[in-house]
Length: 328
Ligand code: 5GP
Ligand code: MN
Ligand code: MN
Image 1 (tube, rainbow, N blue to C red):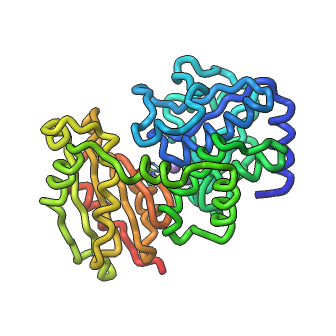
Image 2: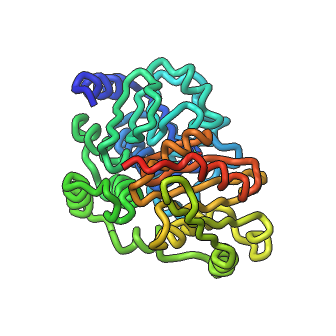
Image 3: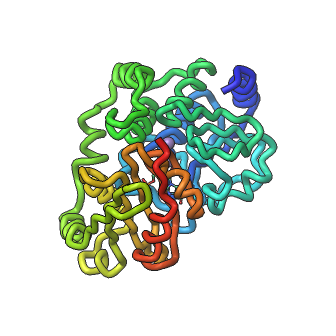
């Protein structure tokens, strides 16, 4: 991030009366945590704040309902049409703004806070650092430059971004800076045990049944180019309907699948309520799944990426597999 862009961002925030915040659709812990943490700090600094994400069925994922600051959220229909100052969080490209992409197009200034290598360079002030473990790390730096104090609620939001995007400090992006930030946030009084339980250690009983169905048809395919192995499975609407399990509860299945020793890549296809397949992919590092997912119309990071498909799971996996190349 250029020093001039940090200064310009701080200057714009200081000068604004009303600030519109947006994160990517299907918000994860980093997207929503970064946005709400910033929102709480800006409100404490006397700004009027509206925060949202561009989804028709607007609701906060069950896993993230513990996040403070949700009273800052407005539905996309109530979002400023032509914001004076807009800030996006964890958004690599305009299409990930969903229904709010036109609002971003009309914003007078758009600060982009992000850490995706695939960031397209949209917006007027880019605060984009692919070396940052989470977008919330960049938010912490901006708050520091603004002189905004980080209280326990703000810390809970920013820590959520950090702990989710580092996979509980397990992924390769877990730098000394990530641990130092965690130490600062924990010192603000947040409860790491409660956050971990909310994020990873609870689910409805129905989840176990649907996970069982997904595991029952998991496939290990070791025939991809370059000797790359791929493990994959899917969850369709019928599986979820049989046990009344909401779509959002299936997010953790990829973490069970990806632990398999043999393959380089893990894939889980989840059919959403509209019948589209949301595809989660993970790599152990030998393959850049972000690049393969970009070629499939999605995007993401080297080791965690995704895309949407309207074809059958078998066809989708075959096409995705043909794009995999050992890159390191
Ligand atoms: P997940 O599998 O947890 O849904 O997504 C993992 C990562 O892949 C996300 O952090 C995000 O960067 C990326 N990703 C997932 N789905 C999409 C998509 O449809 N489009 C883009 N551009 N990126 C996605
Ligand atoms: Mn994200
Ligand atoms: Mn992120």
